[in-house]
Amino acid sequence: MSLPRIEKPDLPECMTWEELERLPAEIAEQIELWNGRVVWVRRGPSEHQRFTRRLTNSIEHDARNAMSEHPQSCWRVDLETNVFLGKSGKSDFLTPDFLVYRCLESAYQDVRAADVLLVGEVLSPSNTQTDIEAKKGRYASAGIPWYWEVTLARESSSIATVRAYGLDTGHAQLPDGVHPLRAANYILVGEWTHDNPNGVEIDYPFPIGIPWSELEY
Image (cartoon, rainbow, N blue to C red; front, side):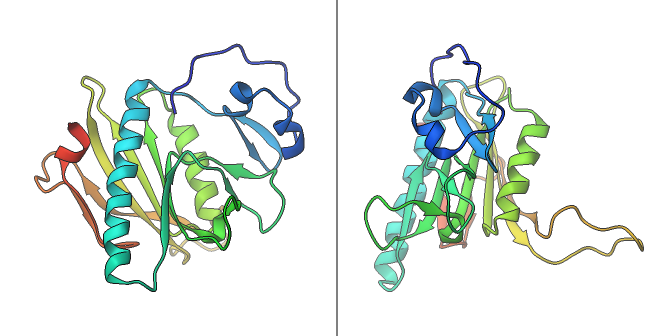
């Protein structure tokens, strides 16, 4: 999401959802709460919002096609929507750039991690590897099955790479006494660049095919 840069107010290190709601919208929109800790979300250039929207539209188109063939399935595709990580409470959430989740029982219902099938982040050149890995680790710990990482080109207004990761809940063989930091991690299962003339093609969580032309008009 690309927003005007504003002066950050002096906020406490930790907040509740209720306290966050009392902030001005232009401030609250730039904050995630990680177990109540205030995390400022880095805002990218206009290309970030443009490609987020195009990817979301393309994935939604494929979701509609899949649902028409399998009427028993129901998915929603959205952008920049809060995903609450716990079964209850709202002071632990992330805001992916785009996401796929199961249809909810009622309108305006909170999206919980247990309902989410795929989250995606559009990475601008300003994103740091530390930021990326921290957020990816939280998605994995929440049990979200699929994670996409979209990298923007540095020298042109275009997408450089799309990577798809699947959630692995097993453990690699580690030396005795060495334990993984997380119970689950993502494994790279697909990578697409402009060397792949057909664009992005993957069958999960439903068949998705995105030609480069849909992202570059």
